[in-house]
Length: 584
Image: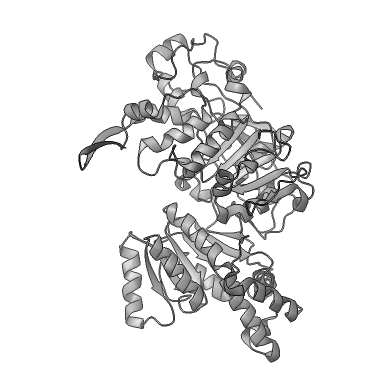
């Protein structure tokens, strides 16, 4: 998580504006994030007016707008409503992104049945997931079938080849079940043809120690009239809250009203927070979950119990002797996936660097309190970059409080550090940012021959940079033009090459289809893609460029001795052309 899938997918799709509208399918808890990221990463030539050109579908009765250039819909809604399975013009979508694509792992599920024809018939498709298979090879079938339509065998044949068969006896019936993985090297070759995989260990030295992500929640609860009451009281309050309002200081008359707004905001967004927590739990992420109000913590605890997730809870009512016991339990037991913590009661003195993700279900009006809570994970002994997720409910007190935190952090930075600092100054990643941007001055990209592994400006992690200059991190490539050590090393390791384009360093990745694996040239490669589909990836340091295909140089000899023979890849004539990866 947090290695730039969203940014890469949107930047890639932006290269094909004639194929818009873009369909984005994601979990319901991430729709707000995609709206913000689309407005951030898509150029103004596509999205000049985000409110008009980006449509988030919130309920089944919504109507698609003809002017929408980006349509964002949840898995459940698109599976239930056929109206969302084509554009407002009644045409098939030609460019589609599926976030958390492992939601499609079961071919017989309703969402898989609904999305499979959409993904198979679209011209361009990006499936994003940190966990393409959770437990067994059979879970890959549905994703591959969407990317390689018409090329795979049946699900049963696929599983026979790549899974271990197990027969279970249920009463008098014998049920066949697929488990594990066999022929893993061959399956990896199939995946490697359509997959770009990132690991934190590959980019850890390039990542900041702490990254903050603003997660926008667009679904607020109106249970027991909470949302209505919240809006009425916000209207009656009539202004943005000040520090004294929330702390009960100089504005004593407004303290009670502002504190009540703070409580109602927590209650109104708790269901959306619970959805986001479920998303993290199902992604097998281990994290610290901070909240402020007891009612919010109680609801989140009920959600964790329903999910059967291992967790601990520490709040102001937890005795000090038991607190230490719970902390040691969380640190020593990986089965404890979540630590549910009170912001004020647990912001200091706890060492919980065993996980690298921190989630704030609610905000606090003091920046120092939030920073101290962040540092429960970001401290000595932490081996990874720490991701901090701030869950912000749109059009609520959250937005006002966050702006106030920005102002206060600025003042603290001037006083203590001698320079302005911001609560979002280090923000990067795919969930949003408050960082201000400016052009990077005098970029000095090195030539392709230098083999420079880092894009221009890769060491400039200071606040205020154009976020597009540093948001995509990639493993160190081989030197450009370096000779491969042999046939096997070329097939398994060749990462592409570094080229220079418009004063930006661009890495072209090897990304092939099984159907074109024996082709020697990129030009011929593209002609063999089914239905004009393009399965390529573009990685770029700040400057959008046209995506490329870099073909593997399979010869007759190589295809005969090195290329796996797939049951669904027979009959392709090997190419005799010399290898010639295409350039940008």
